Length: 381
Image 1 (cartoon, rainbow, N blue to C red):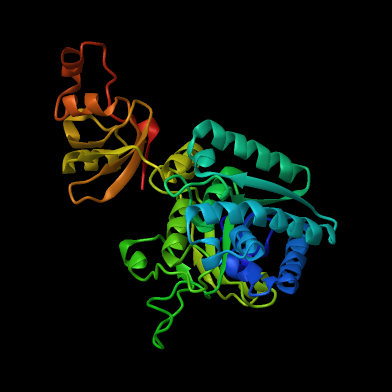
Image 2 (cartoon, rainbow, N blue to C red):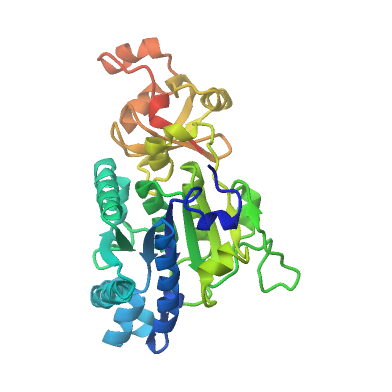
């Protein structure tokens, strides 16, 4: 059964496994952890567990907590070194807090600290999947955060919205609930009195992205509406529903599921089909790509029809990549229409631009593969 409304998030049949992302501003106030609010949320999590749902928490807050302990300026985000140090201190307090409060409901917390590469590398991604699955089977509540103590500016998620979507993919979750400081997605800046909350979004389009405000209102977090829409795109490619909702209220899960306040992004099978999602959703959700292939209109039409990408349709090669690396596939207007795993390295692709498959061996000096990107290693966006 598919999720079609916010109330479905409370149904163990339509939503057997739910990922809840909690932002820094919800967890940490000026005086430290907001224990009363966290206790109320955990009571809701315990209720969800009682009705038979698996829950995974993606928890921000380590940098904010550590910065307060170390008395660092700018909430610990003044420099990369400050953020890493703050995270190292704050993560202990954060995981201890979750463990303590979940234990009051007889629930066991399990900490997972992930880096971008843990979910971008296919083998490590599958390891994360196995760990999450075993923890849930054992009755634990995984509490996930980015490993900010070792993450760098170049290799990091940068916000827990996209991390939550990737974790949902790895855990084969039904839905993601992003708790933030806004009720959901508005058709314009919510500061505008004429702004209207969108209760339902069927596909994140360019028009939807235009409604986003990239800033973070609290100043504690690193994400804004733009990152949440990117998370929605990652989720929908895997057939996972995503909800943006306001967590500043008491009992925020009930406000979403019972009062129906929030924005629901509906999942869809996509052009590749939901059953193809396990590997292709991982590929479509990749955040780090090694290069790009620019293709002509004929090739774009062929990909839309389910074909592989042939060298004849490639007009430009960008970046340095090796065979097996993930690359973006763009049309002539610069729009990324697919992700794929390259069958040749960048130099070979450049030598094959516009050439027929039968000419590859003469050009390269060895027996060629028929496609630049095979359809089995390609996902349309």
